[in-house]
Image 1 (cartoon, rainbow, N blue to C red):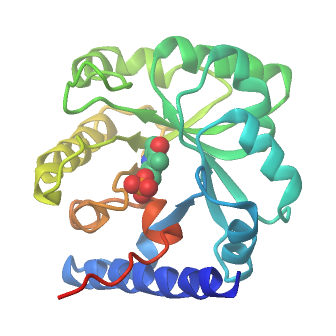
Image 2 (cartoon, rainbow, N blue to C red):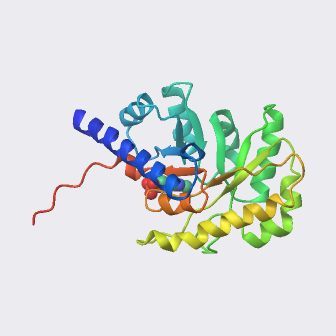
Length: 238
Ligand SMILES: *Cc1c(COP(=O)(O)O)cnc(C)c1O
């Protein structure tokens, strides 16, 4: 479908431009922000095209689709696992993911640790924080992470490299700003209390609707799906 393909090029160019503009405004280097293309709802042909266009970081939220697509796409793709991870699905995810964004409990972190030991791996992970405190959201609470930080960072066979959050859904991206800011401040706070081997460098925050605000607040990984794959809406008649 050539017209869909053209839109991929256009969408990708726009998103890259907006990322670069947001970096410039925030006084940040454009290569300090990595685009993770979220492919969970995209057709395989479109994902292939995106990879051909130079996108190497892809995000999936279901272990089965991650496994399938890891087999269908070039080995150079860096897979990001961004969805809720059940304890019995840790192994397939560890087989493919370069980074797990969504470690939402100490129990899951410990499970990943023991599976990683069996597989002789040392996976890189982010801890998902429920900053907004919404009951419907996955994630470790800020209070728990603060009080248990020494327990989290002492779990072996794992590299905790940063934090991730999802902002509440809202039409106005400014609603997300305080959430993103709190995640950055929490990272700074935990960094000040980190063991020497623990380096929190990543902040995974920002999606299609709010990535610009996230970059202004310090995001290093933005997870963007619909803005990349959306087909153009038909022109509205005047
Ligand atoms: C689906 C998803 C995204 C991408 O959302 P868009 O609004 O389509 O950009 C980002 N992060 C997570 C965790 C997701 O599940």
